[in-house]
Image (cartoon, rainbow, N blue to C red):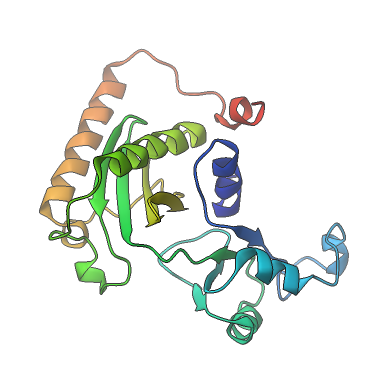
Length: 226
């Protein structure tokens, strides 16, 4: 039942910084629905209030999915409406664009092992894992590490990647709905590949040898109760 917008809402409840984000109605009603299906929504939308809250530049992207499919980087109202008109029956979110100084992509295994990788989504795909990056403030790395665990424990994910864009020293969680993350040798590089294979193998062996019962419930309820 979880999706990217749910995850952002959960993160904001548990103290992890996320960009300002709104969910938008479909441009075109999805199959099997009519305007009456969405009668809980208030029309017309106050676009000025939405743009004032999120700001530009921003990203218009589906509430779920991956691989940068149907993601638009918009810089003004005209670009937004051109992209929104093109979104069809997809359910979209509009999210504040974080102008980042540092960016991290993190593997998390077993809700306890974290591997922080410097990453730059602006580079060509084959060069996004940064091997020659500058030193990073250890306090920033500690917060990224702790935020990774907070998110994955709240969501109940035993395998995930969490991405952070850092602005003014604050890591904003951008993407953390990746329970089947990219772990291809060519894509992530030998060192990152060795880490993820080793940690997943250790975790799988530990589970196979343990007597614990699988979780009967996802972990959201305890967090939402406060």
